[in-house]
Image (cartoon, rainbow, N blue to C red):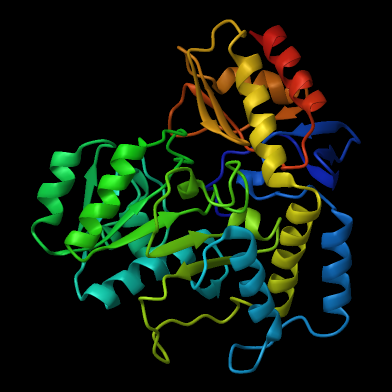
Length: 374
């Protein structure tokens, strides 16, 4: 039976990984500067991660959310302690799309409204409302297009105010650092305006932290660069270091009722242990501070690279924009220099989303390879 052919694939077959490196079937070693779409946060085969999962699977790996699972409470408390998001409530699921889907649904329940405001080049997932709020028409089926979504430009305060003044918007959803869209960031002034207008017109502010959360931006959540307070925070990817984990943090002003949201796999014992391992390593190794300082070093070095037109992002969620499409350049990096990098909807941008355990020497290796390839 053939696979349903929806992924363009590089001719590389990884069979083993450790730290910031991946090894293929021919024992070739690759530097991983992409982390499998920003998923690998504490490094491949992290010993704390492996130990926690092995110990848990020898006891119980899964049961439904119809029973008590103290690991969920432990995880909620640790997220609160490290993120500083005091008083929020945790609902767990299994992916970023599911997290955003539940965030949008919850906003609609809370406000009793249905329209969503998203932003140009946004990517929030591939399921129903999440994909409708994604600015990629090609992947929006007619079924999804029935959702009411308005796409605005970053910084367009007038359009935002006009749209929200109609009093039919349930949520404004925003990535503080756009992922797939190309690492664009709003200004602090605009983020503050979004918060102000959401409060005024009783719409929920959703911070999509699926890619940027759990330390990748140099803060626990990327919205914390702007000193705002979202109503709902969605998260996934780096939350589980490769184990399928997602979730939303819900402001205490939003009250739950039984049956309001639900999931089969979300918050299972293995998922909780995976995320607790990530949090343990983030804290012990000071990886959030490390991401911030290493990101600054990256920017300083990138300024001296010929051909780089713009340096985007922060922490270890970074991008280099050129004045040409980078598809062939990325192929050179992977096949000639054995370095994984990422692309985006901006075809002139290379995305850098490595494990947060990366060291300066690895960036030096990347820049040397980049200069040779250019």
